[in-house]
Amino acid sequence: LDDNGGFQLGDLDVIAADSSMGKTSLVMNIAKNIGAKGKASMIYSMEMQSWQLAARLNAPKADTPANIIQYKNLTEIQYRSLQHAMEETDKLPIYFDDKSTISVDAIIASIRLNARKLGIKFFVIDYLQILSSVGSVENQEKFLGDVSRRLKNLAKELNVNITALSQLSRNLQDPRPTL
Image (tube, rainbow, N blue to C red; front, side, top):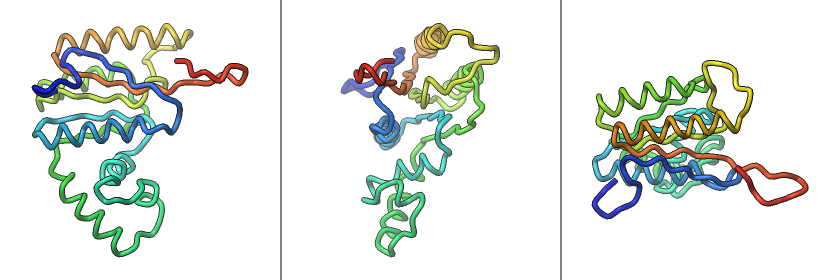
C-alpha cells in the first residue's frame, strides 16, 4: 500500500495457516504499520470482539501477551506499558467490525461504503470459513470460490486491497494442511 511494495491495490490476498498460528496478530501488525503512515484499515472479525483485537494490536508495544492483557490482572508495569501502547494506537485509523452475524453481502456493502466514505484501502476479513451467506450453502467449496471471486472483483473495482484469512484444516489420516 505504499511506494515500497507490499500489498497491492486491486488484489485479493489470502493468508492461510493452521489454527492459532498468528494470522490475526500478523494482520493487526500490518494494519498498525499502515496506520502509522496515515492510511486507514478496516478489520472484519467474525471470530473476535473488538476489545480482543485491540489487545492483539497493543500487545507487542506493551511487551505483554494479548491473553494476559485480556484475561489476567496486570502488574503496575504491565498496566503502564499497555496505557502507553494504547495512547499510540488510539490515534491510528484502524476500524473494527466484529458483528459475528455479518454476511458476505453485508461485508461487501461495508467495504464499498468505507472505501468511498473514509478512503480506506486495506480491508481484512478474519476469517473466510466463518462467513455466512444470505441463502443456504449446500457446498462450502463452491461458496468459498464464489466469495473469493466476488472479493477479487470488488478489490479491482474499488482499487483496494482485501486480505482474507483462512484456516487450514487437517485430516487425521493425512497431517498436511489443506484449504
